[in-house]
Structure formats: structure tokens, C-alpha cells
Length: 385
Image 1 (cartoon, rainbow, N blue to C red):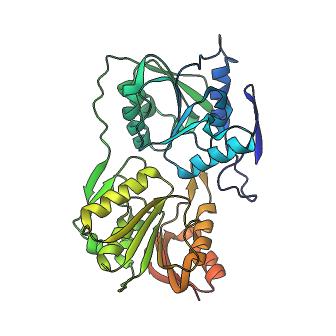
Image 2: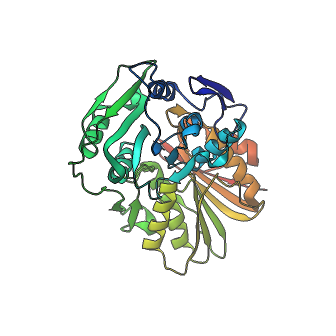
Image 3: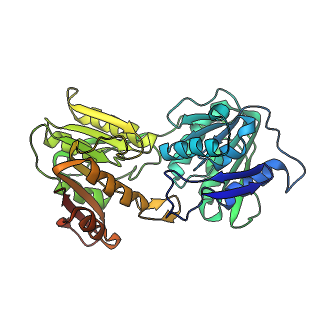
């Protein structure tokens, strides 16, 4: 936990789940720059926040917590980000209902007077967000985006201009930049192109030729990555009423393949992204019979799954947290998998060779087998004894 000191006050903030070993802060210079701008420190005067304030993509709740006195609505794709916001409000003595919490799958407010956008890593997610928010924006809406210089590109500004209106940027401060957009009510950008659907290639086993649905911002949203292809070609052949978890399910291709391979299995799709779980549900519905047993969960990994209740966990863990490279999420996923698995249950993992997941799996499970490999990726199997 660290303290963010601004003209709006000083706030103790942490990411979620809080990990004392994690040195990453819950905010960065882009959040600080935007808060300074809203207070009017760097220009003629403060921003009027008396209307409906929407905060989009607030990663760990730093913006919503700082602006809680104005009762903003936070719109985000991350369940962990939402939980961080709740925790940060509580640790600063702010009422939980001071901030409205919406996911990117929810209907946004009908009218937005101040729109604050933390530019996401995914340009596709930004595009979809702007399309969804455009009907709520009016000529007087104050629209300000923020991000690090490395996150804001010409393509970013073109999206604002095409969907909302004329756009300019600020000078860079501490490697952060602001985006100022003037809404143009005459623009007619049309509907969002998301979700996308594509047909899977012939080299992915039971899913060959089938269709995947991908909402904006999820991993491999526009094409299947080579690591997932290797995983799909290497999945275990199991039969019977297994309980299977597709952990970090993304668009759900792994869990859907497991359901097709074993119709008696019950498959749970879990991801911290609302868009990912929506994609997985659509992919499963498109390809598996309606009587198949499936559950779709937006949540914090396996934290709500009982001990010793799962037969098989399939996992393609992320190794980025926004701009930071970290194995924190993978470590938690592996540890939770061991807890949730029954004796004899298996964890199957795909990852880049250089990440060295086999070392941690051997430490946790006492065993680790290489099931498949190519020059870049490896599929690993660990069994709970």
C-alpha cells in the first residue's frame, strides 16, 4: 500500500489482491496528471464536476477514490480493478456507494457531463468503449483522456476524432500526456464493430472449423495465437463426469474444446475480465449442445472454488499487468489450482519457454511433465499427489 497525495487529498491505495511482495503502485503519473488538470493547477481553472462524471478504465480505483466526493460512475472491464476500488474506498473511510460501479458490459449512463478515460492498452477496447459511450456524450461534455506517452499514439487520437470529435494532446509531464476532445454532435460513427467472430484453423483438433466470438480487449481477439494452438492440439483425453476449470478463460476456446472432447464434463470458465467471460459464454453456446454443463464466472481466479473439488484445471496465465511484466498472477493461479484440485487432479499450463513455469510447478506439486513443446511455447502437466 502507498499514499497518493494530490490537491484532492491524500489517499492510501493498493492493488487487488494486495500482496506485500508486490512493489507496483495503484496509480501512475498519468493518473496524477489528470487529477492536477481537473483541479485547475496547470491551467486557467478547475473542471466543473457537478454533473454526471464517468471514469472509464480506472485501473485500481485511484481516480474514482480521489473524486469520490463528486460521486463518479466507474466503468471498467476488470473485476480485480473493481475490487481494488471497493477496498480503496473502504481503507480511506469513504462510503461504498460514493462511486457507482459498472462493467463495460453494462449500459452506461444516459447522459455524461464529464468523461474521463484512462487509455487502455488495447486499441480495440478503446474503440468499443467510445462507441458505447458516444450516445451519452453531448456538445458540452468535458472529455479528457490520460495515459503514459507510450500508450498514446496517432491511432489513439484518430479513434477519439472519428467517434467523438476534434482532439488535441497536452505537453508531456513525467512521461504522461492528456487528451482533450471536443464532442461533435453531428458525427455519426455508426455501431461498434465488436464483437468479432472468426473461424478456427484446421490444426486445432475438435475445434477445427468452428467459430469463436471475441469481445474487444481480450487476448487473441482477432486471431488465435500460436501458444493456444499448441495447447488445443495437446489437451488431455479424459472421460467421465470431470469437473474442469478453464482458468483465465479469455474467449473460451480451451474450455470449449474440453467440453467437446468430454461431453460428460462440467466446465467452469473463469476470468477477471467481464468481456472475456462474455466471449467465452458466446463461444461455448455457439459450439456445444445446450444441455452441456457449463458455468461462467467473472471473479478472482479460483478464490471462490472449494478445496479439493476440481479434477482438471486448464490455464494460459497472463504475464503482464498493464505495462508491467510480472509472474504474480501466474503464481497465484498455480497455488490456487493446487488447493482446488482433488488428489490425482491435474493442472495443465501453456506458456512461453523463457518464463520457467516448470520450476514453480515442481516446487508446488513435486512434479512437472512437459507434454508438448515448440521453439517458443511449452505445455506442462502437474499432478496433485
